[in-house]
Every structure is written in C-alpha cells, then in structure tokens.
Image (cartoon, rainbow, N blue to C red; front, side):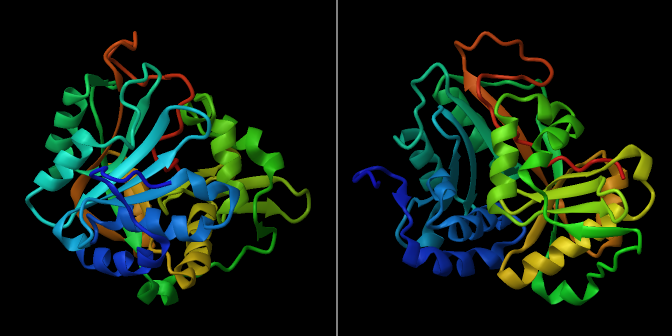
Length: 319
C-alpha cells in the first residue's frame, strides 16, 4: 500500500521495465537495484512479492534516486540498497532521512545495507547517525562486484562430468546448506531465508549419480546475486563451482537477469574464479554493513547476531 506524501514514492508495476532500462547505463553502480527490480518482477503474484518494494524519490526517475527494500516477514528487520542517478545525492538523502517506510523508532529494528557503492557511504553514515542508529560491525565489508550479461551467454559451458548430474535443490537440503554456510547459517531466520530462495528462485546442486549425494550447490539471492556457492570439502578441486556458475548463467541470462556476485576484496581465490569464468569486475568498492538502534546492547566488534536478522553477505566459499 502506498503512503501519500511520503518522499519515497512507490514505483508502480507498469513502470518497472522502464526503470530497469534507465538503470542499465549506470552499471555497475546500479546493478544491485536493477537486480532487486528483476526479482520483484519475478516474484510478482507470489507469496514472496510482498517482501520486495521499489521506491523512487522523483516520478522522473533519472532526476533522483531509487531505493529497494526487502522486508523480513513479521519483523522489523529490513535489507536495503539504493542508487542515485546523479552525483548530487541531496534528494535521495533527504528522502531517506524523512521517509516513513522504515520503522526507525522500534528498538528491534535492524537495517542491512546491501551492496552500497562506496561513494554513497557518507550518505549512509549520515542516515545512521541522524536516526540514532549505530553500525554493528567495527569495519564494513569491502566487496568487489562481478557480473555477467546476456551477450556473454556463449561463454558459459555446463557440461557435467559423467558421475554427477545437475538438479534444483529441495527444501530437504535447508539444514545441510545452513550447516555449510558458516556464520550465515547460524543467524536466526537463516532457515526461512534459504527456504525462500529455494522455493522462488533458480538454484542448482551437483548430485552424485550413484548415491544421490549433494556435493556442491549455489542459490540466487533476492538482489539477483549468486550466493551461498559451496563445495563439500572432499569434492573440491573438481570444477563444481565453475560448473554451477556457468549453469546458473545459462539459466538466468535468457530470463533477463544480469547475474551478479559480490566477493570480499581479500578473497583472491574467488576473484580469480570469477575472472576465469569471464565475469566483468567493477574497479569500485561496494559495502555491506549492518546497523541497529543505539539502544541495542551489542558490542561494536566482530559480527553481530541481532534478533531475527537475515543473511546480508553474499558468501562465496573456497573452491
């Protein structure tokens, strides 16, 4: 439901495609918002559609900013990302400072800022300070944005070794995926998050033909990112990560997605993998960071586990 008078205007469904086209020339800075729009369109009419909402600061999109909000079910936790078409971010900043779309007054609210371009971090810091919030990590996570487009489809090769097959994941795999995900799997609500991605988004597993064993897997996030890419330790160095990435690109690129991945800057092995697969790489830094009210009694060091959070890092595992 829209809120008349709010500085963030709900983007109507019939304007989503137009907005997508306007965002593409601003890649890679706009790709996180572009990905959220593509996912909103995919989820339209499903149970998951109420979770993603796209807003603009101006009916003439290119004169302002775009905000994508993913609302966690029955909680005050949200995931947010945004893009500003122009260097002047005043309209976007003012809208974020005064909007009623986010319940800043609840002591239980947590905000996950997802794939924020480094140039928009001053705005993010001002917003957090103005709303009497604090960052719940001592340092933000510097990420490299990797992406692949439809014109690179021919470079994708997903020929399976004879002893394995590719198949979608099932909800029976949720516990296994959580256990493999490290700190992400320990977060409250991680099971629901994984189940949502399995239910509504393309995903793949590498299965043994003889035993049915799940050897590797990958999911696709609500922001159109390859996420939770993982190979079981005893099956690493067999090319399963490359197989999964190529197969997902073959599946997703014809559907209109730009397939992205955010990789921690110091993870040189994963960066090398995506470079070998022909992904384009941003020279700029993107940031994931978590914030909560000043009243939340948590130390400002290390990863934090607030009430009912959602995974906010696109984790790329060792291969």
